[in-house]
Length: 119
Image (tube, rainbow, N blue to C red; front, side):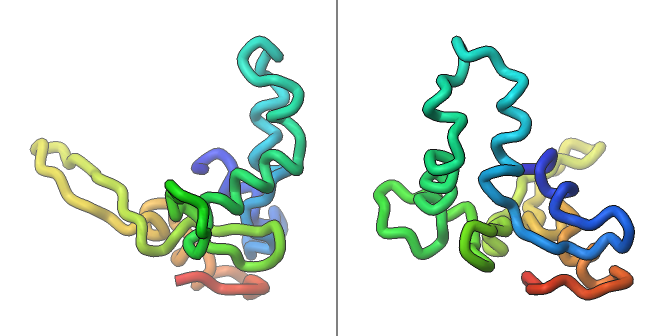
């Protein structure tokens, strides 16, 4: 997800113009050999189905509830998720995923507002 998220922001202004899409998820897999990931699992319909199954409101069991759909085929990370972090003293804490990825910060301080805000 960290690799894909920066691609959702325009280079010129930094504003998010789309959410995470199947095409963005598929790009890193293009470099893997077919012995690791079959041709069927590289196709856009398969990846769209995976994203849809992991939506917050999905009826699929066991839904991971990882994504919030903004528009058809466009997702952002579920704002309710948190990431466990360990500081230099070895103390653990939980940080909201959108804060960890810098999504809210990017969308608050961009030159052109995103089409749809999260948070």
